[in-house]
Every structure is written in structure tokens, then in C-alpha cells.
Length: 141
Image 1 (tube, rainbow, N blue to C red):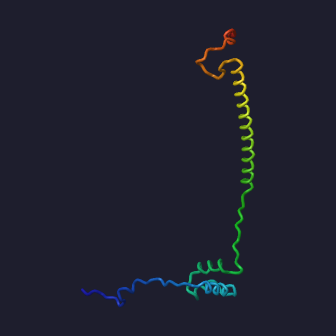
Image 2: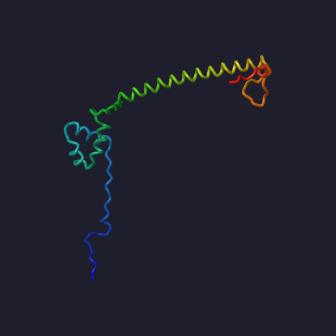
């Protein structure tokens, strides 16, 4: 059996992409042509570049192209929910402040009573009852 030989040389089956570089002045000239009426598809065929490259050059070098600002549109319910959450947070902070002040006030009263009665009024089950409490009789139901 004979082997079939191809007419191509061995290294010819692998083709490399041609790397090309366009200077900034060349890019600007191509963008100017597009601004003067040349279509983007025609420019990409004429200069053998992809259309995405053409669009990038237009974004970078065009006199007429300006980046557009993105406008975020939020639904009314989102802003209303944010407002409600912030109001609730303010109420919680106010309540927390009041409870903290109340706790500090009660601690001050306990400390004052401790110093005047010479007793530890904080809950401690190992300490016997004060003499004032022993005289009282429990109520019978």
C-alpha cells in the first residue's frame, strides 16, 4: 500500500495569525473616516480589524462620542423601605438610650442604698437577709 502524500509542505498546515499594530495617528485617521461617513463594517474590512476594535477606537478617539452616564433607577418601594428602616433604627437607638439611662439610674440607686444601709443589695443568695426583712411576717392566702 502506498501512502498518499499531500502537496503541502509539512509546516504549512499551521498558520499563525499576523500581528499588526496601528499607531495612534492611524487609529485617529480611521476614526475620522468613520465620522465622515465610512461605515464601521467597511472600515473593519478595509483595514482588516475586527469591529470590536473599531468600536474601542471610536470610544477612545472620536470627537463626537461621549461616554454616557449610567442612571440607576430604583423602585419607589425600595426607597420607601430604606426610609422605614432608617426611622425604625432611630426609634431603636432612642429606646436603647432610654434603657441605658434607666439601667445607670437603677445602678446608682443600688449603690446609694448599699452605702447608706451597709448592705449588699444586689442579688446574692449566700448573704443572709437584712434585719429589716426578718421582722415582716409572710402573708397567708
